[in-house]
Length: 175
Image 1 (cartoon, rainbow, N blue to C red):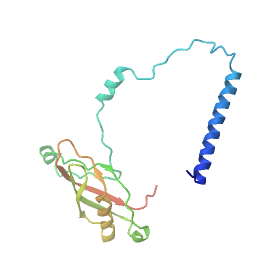
Image 2 (spheres, helix red, strand yellow; image 1 turned 90 degrees about the vertical axis):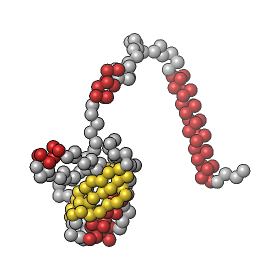
Image 3 (cartoon, rainbow, N blue to C red; image 1 turned 90 degrees about the horizontal axis):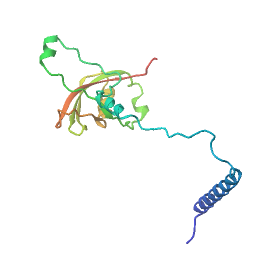
Image 4 (cartoon, rainbow, N blue to C red; image 1 turned 135 degrees about the vertical axis):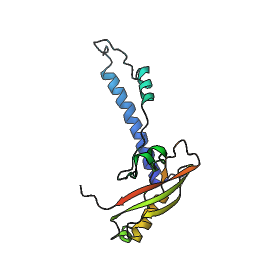
């Protein structure tokens, strides 16, 4: 069996590290052989939280993450909001980056788009349509392409999926 030079060097370095570790341990053991141990009593400290801490964690309500820059739709009247149940909120769970060329988007990076997104029971995007355009067709198409690869959280009451509006803002932040 013939070893490649890289494997040979790696093996030699591993053996050398093992040898240094063994010799170092022997040397250190020889230097501390007459040590009697700590002068004070050693106490075991529990590292797990007390059982009541788990009950407190279970009582806390889970708050889903929010999309930065998301705008909530305004209700026309309080009576309409009280009678109709609110639609589930689109909460992104996985947002992989789109591999698009920056040069293709240059000059088309400013604006707001509102998308109507339809999600299946697993949180995958079935359809994304522009409901309020930014006025720039390239930016609108980019927003649809970006959202197509995202996954959203599916609320417990919607195992078959749901729809919602997703506002998106593009542009350089001036912070």
